[in-house]
Image (cartoon, rainbow, N blue to C red; front, top):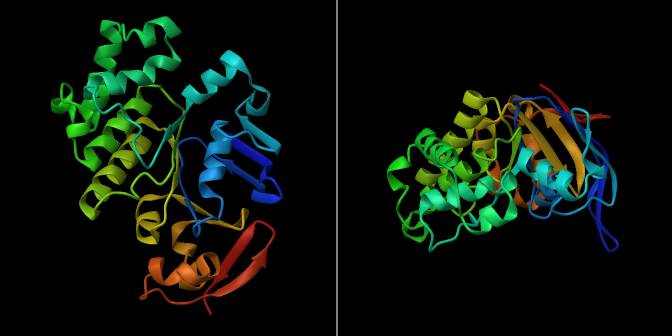
Length: 270
């Protein structure tokens, strides 16, 4: 179980994440939504400790994530894998080698630098690629792949870290509609088949409603919505997205009353 208590991330005088608290049960698929600059990416990077929070606490089961240093922090980043919008692959290396870089968290530094992977690790890499239906590409250079294929390679790399949580930071933002579906299907498969918790930043509300068990909405760095996808109606989305609402709101959604609540926005039919 992942627990955030009063998480804050400041950049100078600006609070990009402002006192966010939530509990994420194991195996949940959480969509993090909100307009550009709402703090979605900063939140995920803070959880992974790629960007250290200014204050607050992060717990995963009995692990105090904020107290981790050195090897302990390295192990946390293996348990809490990141997937990025731009894939972050080594284009000149083949697909399998890129995937095996996910084992660097578990191998001695000298072995990962020299790319001296064991037969067991190579089998793990191929199995991860097979689970995403791209094992046939194992020997191909990463920079020859389509965007959707590259993102699936990045997901496979995260998978062989043997994570408990995958944090996906706008993983489909640069993809066409077909590859968007392929990548989201891959994340859903990992979530349901392996029971891995997924927190995924998404701009599209259609995707958020289709794939996620739970949606959390940020506005100005604050948590202002936390509920099931069915509760994210047109009216709520307009409160979340403001001027961007026309880009993400389904015009067929019916408006609802928005009621204030301590944990965010509650909704009821008018």
